Length: 84
Image (cartoon, rainbow, N blue to C red; front, top):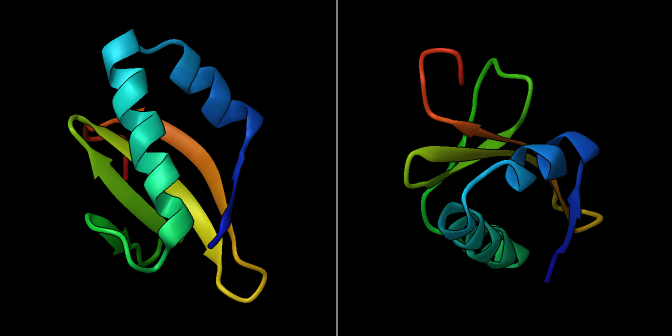
């Protein structure tokens, strides 16, 4: 299992979301403890962060260190033309 760590920025972004969306994102992040055996996770190329997970209209952008087994949640953003 991986340890999940949240950046201050990601926590601030999640707090602004409606409760239903926040709950869905929390469940998806909890599933990231099982990385790399997660669905809807894509490795990003030429991007600031290594991976993204799709949760409805939101994207969880994160890095994963497979050696240390840490998933670092960096941002939670609504999907639009500025997300990537």
